Image 1 (cartoon, rainbow, N blue to C red):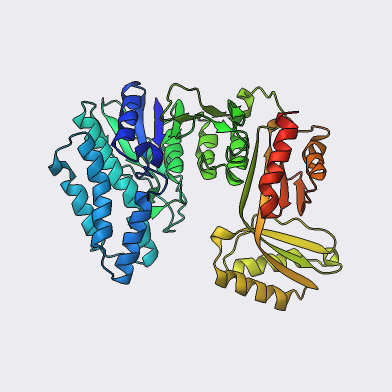
Image 2: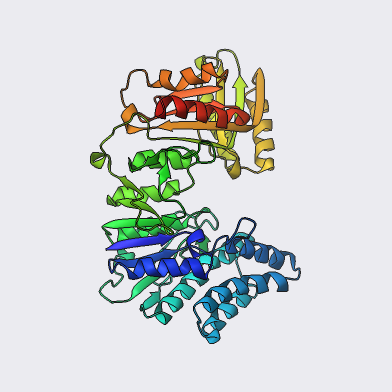
Length: 452
């Protein structure tokens, strides 16, 4: 049995959904289908999720939402009309869109979560209707029906692993394809709560593990995961197979093809993942597998970079001699509900790296004020933009000269580094760099490793 997840680009319009239908129809093992909300149809288009968030904002601010509601409905209607789906089949979807603004929510966060979740929630209903209309029996499955529970965090929910047992009871003996919306679950109180953006991958992995699938297929708009961002390198090397840990490291550092949190259920269940292209379904794609299944031929599997980070640099003489110094820093972070990503240090220096997408300006200001007052550093600097490059590969384990192969081309190109972190993971080396130099550095490293 396979669990097949389709991203927003694969479901953007009727033409794309036709391809999805053909993929599911072609293989009876594709029993469970996890769907995202309709994505962009063209470059300047707007994703349905973003339209729903605009609708939520208008509802909160009590502004006129008629135009945005019409636009949202038209996206679903256009898909239905592509398949000559009778208009009355869309009536309940229209009613649910209208009802969103009339419901009571226990907080604004839960309001925004419910609106956002409806992109997937409504699309799964529509996909089930279209498949059945085309002669392939399909049934919409509400995550509440199968007990897909998450913690009480409206917009960055964490899956409750106790749900695996209830999800496992889903009946797979029927001839129907089961269509499940991704991206959200329900709290114990029955509220919709969403995973972080891109979280339909997480739903797919949860379903694959719970149902002990033989394969989790993740369909997107590329035929493979590439060793580096194609926007930096023309026609980069395709990765045929990689380990769970490699994918997690690369996803975290900028590979957007697969959500880094979605790897965890797959690891726990030993589920193989296949990244495939909806528009080229016969291409083998990239397999993500346990390390025992990988035959490593190159030291480096991939190079990722991201500028979504910020950093705090702190200098104080003899900080390494002060017992509990780091604990005092961590207590300040906890006080302001801030998590950190990395904390490289020296005898007199400490750098704390943050994911700035998780921070508000108030949190930053209050944290800096408390550190200045409580820690009294000689130097305290906030770096609002900080680049991270991650070089990842199982072949780097105990490899002599791995760091030299990475750093030498940067020296040749006159690129300086702000941080080198080797050793935290045996399969990766992390570099801190000025954001405006990151693409140039990635190209230099790629050319030295993959073209030498």
